[in-house]
Image 1: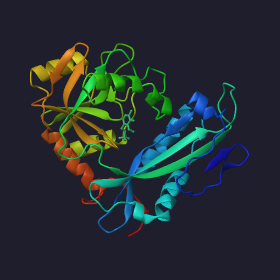
Image 2 (image 1 turned 90 degrees about the horizontal axis):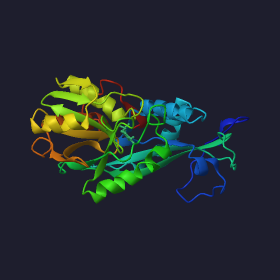
Image 3 (image 1 turned 60 degrees about the horizontal axis):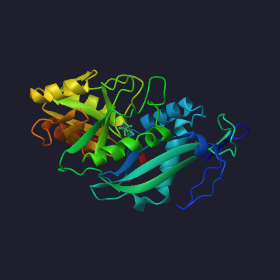
Image 4 (image 1 turned 90 degrees about the vertical axis):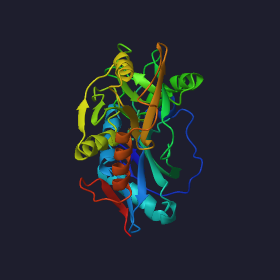
Length: 324
Ligand code: PMP
């Protein structure tokens, strides 16, 4: 789908996956005027195909676009694009319970211009690809590296938007994490390098028995759709939830005293993934007994149940893309 001021959204088409030609001076390439989404479609027991919280992803896509001075793609356009893509070939959507169809809408400025101002022409693409569960069920907890050298997002920056540049700026810390034997980065706030915010592509929760704590949406972290789902499901499962800031030092202290029993990350790709070990310049520590915690396991079952149509959809989270 293309956008220009004269024509609005036009030229919707489905094309086979293939390399594309771009202008070497494309605004999106030079200045990173690029936003994207990531959501999953699941085969349902009756054979239909449903995307998880597609309307919420469409709305976040709009907010990201607005933050980067781009036109807002209408929610209906976003949803129709997903449905038409799935309808083009239903065989894409795996039957296998460990797989799903990952959908990646992306919007970028296509103008050939090196001028430092927003584009006037845009392209919206949706890519579809079959994915395995990123961190499979029963996988060992991940280790995380708390970066104090780099920061992801400052107040007033683009931390709340799902824009390409946020990830480009984080890769150097991901490399640092791997050098320290960790799989993921956990980001601290940019101002004080003190408060835990989120992970590279996931939000984070801390478990104190049946009480969960997660950092508040301060404007510098991505408002995860999975995070929001976990807050709802945890309450339904009888857990208590609290959105409050936690410092790296307190995290360590709460693990040393065994008050914190587990931690987990959540996101579209990661679903719910236990975090077992934290490393930082200031030293390392283990969370709980280093094994997946019970709250993460219960939440994962509840979440996957809704996504794959095994339990009733009490919140209208399943969005049908194709009938049975
Ligand atoms: N934080 C970041 C930085 C992310 O990239 C993602 C993945 N979109 C998340 C959190 C989790 O968001 P969601 O649950 O909507 O996938």
